[in-house]
Every structure is written in C-alpha cells, then in structure tokens.
Image 1: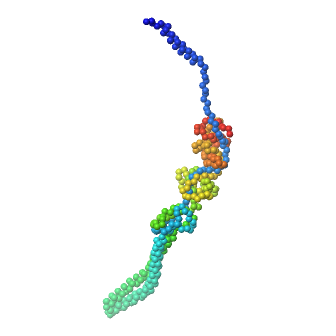
Image 2 (image 1 turned 180 degrees about the vertical axis):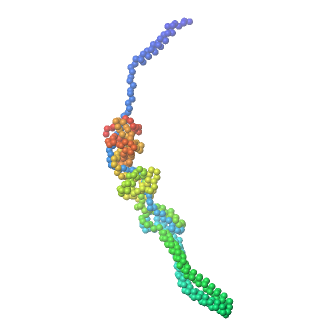
Length: 412
C-alpha cells in the first residue's frame, strides 16, 4: 500500500490558511459607514397667549328640588276616615276639603265637655245660694248661742239659791256647748265659701279647656287646603281607623319649592360677602332660572349646602328631582380663560418657553361658556410664581407632556 506524501497532507492546510487570511484582509480593508446619530423628536403643539380679564366664573352643581314647608297633617284624635277627595300627586285649590274624619267621634267629646261645664256652673250657683243662707243662718246661730248662755246663767243662779236641780244645770251647759259647735261649723262654711268657689271655678276652667280641645279636634277632623297645594302622600283610606297623631296627608306648596346643592367651602369666601352686600347671584338649569338665597347652618367635610330660590320655570317641579345647575359667581379680576384641554390634572398647565415645556401650578376658579365655546378660568396659585401676561400656554393635550419636552409651535 502506498503511503501519502507530505505534500498531499499540507495542501489542504495551506488552502484553509489562505482563505482565512483573505477574509481577514477583506474585513480590515472594507469601507466604514458612519452610524446615524439619534435626534430628539420635536412635538408640534398649539399655544395660546395669556391675557388677563375681569370675568365671572361659572361652576356646575347638582341640585335637588326640596319642599322646606312640607306639611304633615295628623289626626287630632282617634277616629275613622269618612271621605278622601283627592289622590297623591293631585293639585288642590285653597279652601278645598282634602279629607274628613267621622265627626260623630268628635261630637260625643264636645257633648260630654259641655255637660261637665253645665254641671259645674250649677254647682257654682248652688254654692252662692248656700253662702247666702249660711250668712243669715250665722246670725241666727249667734242669737241662739246668746240665748243658751243666758239660760245657763239663770240655771247657775238658781243652783246657787238651791232652787234648781243639777240636771237642769247640766242640760243648760250641754245646750251652750252644742250651740257653740253649730256656730263654729256655720262660721267655717261662711269663711270657706271663697275657697270652695275658687275650686269650682278651677274645675269650670278645666272643663272649658277640654271643650275647646274637643271643638278644635272636631275642626281639625276636616283637612282644608290653606293655600294652593300638591298632595305629596295620602297614606289613609276611607273606613280606616287612625290613631291620634297619625299622619293622614302630606302636602306642599308648589310655588314655595327650592333647590339645594352641595357647594365647595372654598367658594364661600366670595359668595357670602356678595350676598351680604345685596348682590344677586344667579344660576340656571336649562329654562329654570335660580337665585342663591343662603347657606345651611351646618356643613359636611369640604362642602356646605346652598339654597336656591326659583325665579322662573318652564314646567312643574316635584320634590326629589335632580337638576344640573350652572351658578355664576361674582366677577374676579386678573383671570385667564383657557381651553379645557390646556389643563392637566386639576391644577397644572404647561408653558412653552425656548422650545420646551415647563409645568406650572395654577388655581381653577370655574368655567365660562361664551358663543358655544367652553373655557376654564384660572389664575396663579398663591404658592407659585405669578403667570405672566402674554406667556404661551400649550393647548394641545399631550399624554407624555413633561417639563423639558421639546416642542414646536404650530403656525395658525
């Protein structure tokens, strides 16, 4: 067998070496391309210059229709409902009867009270006649006592002369003692006349009060509309027995309704002084025109209840209805009107300065609607630098807005 020569063994190695060396040479001598340098994107945004004005901010509130003078007519005494003339939600004119209780339940109480008065008046007349009799009888009793005492003296004199018996003397003593008791009793009745009369008069007054209560209850057994009203609730039916104090009907005056809304306490510092000075603060909800009249005496955390009187309305209102209300606040100087999209969060806007954004904190005082356009009204925050007249505010809402972000101003 033939042994391979050294040439045959080295030839593949030489070819491999030449290939590797050629590749290294080509890589080392190829032309170098410059890497592109990344450039920061410039965001094109719209801006508006700050222009201060004296403006009246508007705020949106959610108000509830209430009936502050809602009346609950209660049963004056136990009784039975005899008739109801209206249903819940119906209108009732002043003077119309809403419902009535069976008057027989009340007439018996009146008759009983009148009988008590007649009885006591008769007792008073009898007491006066008795007093007249006692005064005359007192004089007679005093005369009888004097006669008895004279008889006792005669009996004692006869006894001293041994002309009278001991029994006669004892009998004379007994007549005097008995007459003294009778006279004392008669004097007591005469002197007690005024006291007895006062007691009877007190009973008469009490009976008269009971009669007045019975008559008042009988009068209130008929529920009469005191003014034009709306039935809010009628929880009883004809034939139903009601207890004293049980609510029979609830009603309210539709022209005395008002709206109540929770308002942030930060607005009170401007609203309360304006009301105190007689300024008319108006609001509206569609065709419903309202006027702020005051605030509740208590408050919830961060809010207080405001009361609104209805100036004009386009349709009947009912308690419990909810309305979206726009309230116009007193005019404030040096406010800036901005489109809503310029606001980030609740208190941040971005100024465009030297081609970059700068966040600044502001105070939002309310909104304004003019010509179909809505604006937010802002001013500088007391803890931050004031806003400069003519400064550019970004009005394009960028989700990635941050201080230092490069921006370009769009040409209008």
